[in-house]
Image 1: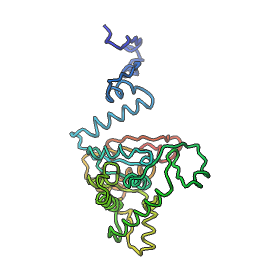
Image 2: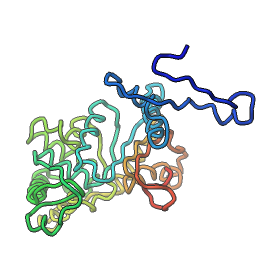
Image 3: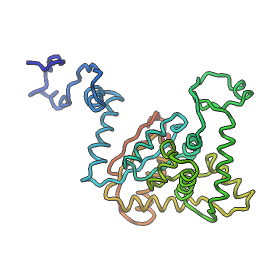
Image 4: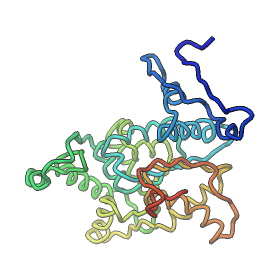
Length: 308
């Protein structure tokens, strides 16, 4: 008797033959999505092969291993690529809100564009095939197919500079401390913005956010302005970030990382174990779990596609 909705499978050569040792995986079946099916059913039954199969494996590594209380895993999240302009910051907020992320390493650009949402600016869906000269003349910024007025950048920059003046930070500081102060400032000035800002949500939840290249973003550009024009002593100190991330990794029972996009944040996380062993002489060992979601491939030799 075949269960309802399934077709019988014939699998010759799967027992008592040399081929059998290669054919022990679950059978691939035609999956027909039904309206009442949940996400778990879709992942387990529908995502069977190719990249969908890898996504299914990643989901189970995250839920069955990294989130298993018995494993006591400290989870890092690295973010590269234009995630927040595309609205994916909401997914990061949800992970933080549910306690599924312990610390974040992000490009400064993702944090900068997150501030647009915190400040209640609107970004619009558009097309990647528009005339950039025409957009420039009309005062419109394009990030692939995301469009918004150029004034969004100018007003976000103005907010950052005003924050830097009133926050009182002076001298060397970690990027995590800078982002925490920035998040607290947003929370004080824009009630409930933690529902639509990664920076604000992380500050509210006590989740540190590091930036591996603090000068490589509009936040860093405004910090540079603050130092030159306001004669500030504020400097984002990469050495503090390196040591703090290493301390988090060292203190963890197990370490796991979700890598979105790759890039500099990926390497900044992955260098933690080599720093402990190679520089400090502490044999912590490698990562216990990692999930990497990227469009790059290992064959091109770039960091984003490299095997962690």
